[in-house]
Image 1 (cartoon, helix red, strand yellow):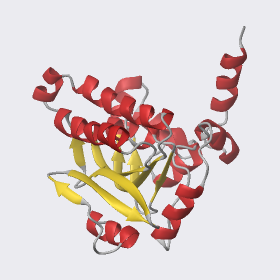
Image 2 (cartoon, rainbow, N blue to C red):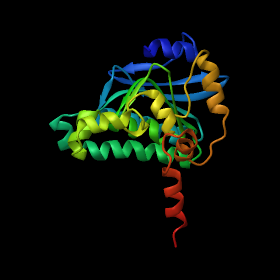
Image 3 (tube, rainbow, N blue to C red):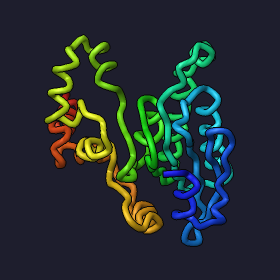
Image 4 (cartoon, helix red, strand yellow):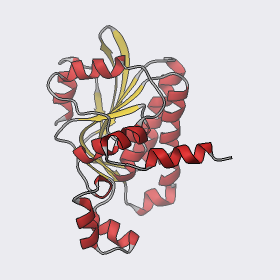
Length: 233
C-alpha cells in the first residue's frame, strides 16, 4: 500500500506525516492524543544515514515528549549493501537504532510496528521486531533471507530448504508464516484506524513472540528452550 493512502486511512487527509527522501516522520493526533510516526518507504535500503535519522527521531521523542507512543511504518529491502555504509559502520548505526527503540520501551513509550509493504532482513530486525508488537497488512511481504542465500550460508541444498519451507514456517517467506511464528502479532484488515486504536489500547506485556509461535505451531520449541535457559542454575 502507498504510504500516503495508509496515512490518510489512519489519520485523515491532513495527517501531517512528511517524507524526506525515503524517511517518513511526523507528529499526528489520534483520538485526541499525540503520536510520533517514524518510517520508511519505497522499499528503502537502511543505510547509516537512514538508520540515524530514525534513531534521532526516537531520541527526540523521548527527550521532548516522555511516554508518547511511537508508530513505526515499515517498508524496507533490508540493510544498504554499499561499501561506503560498511566503512561508516552500518552495523553500529543499525544497532544504535535498535537500542533507541529498546530504550523507549523501557522508559514507558508504547512502540508499535506496522509492516505496510515490504520488510526484509536487518531493516526489519532493527525496527518492527524490536517493537512491543509488530503487526502487518495482509498484502505485506516479509522475509529475512531468500532460500538461495540461506542455502549458501547454511551449506544445505536449496531443494532441501524448499521442501522444509512447505511444512515449517521458519524456512518460508510470507506474512502468514510470520504470524504463525509469532514475529507478527496480527494482520490489520478493514478499518485500519480501528486496528490502530485496538493496538494502542492493549496493555504492554512481556515479549510474547516465542509464546505466540508455540501456540500457533510456527515455532514449537523456542519458548520452551528459552524457559529452560532462564530456569537453569
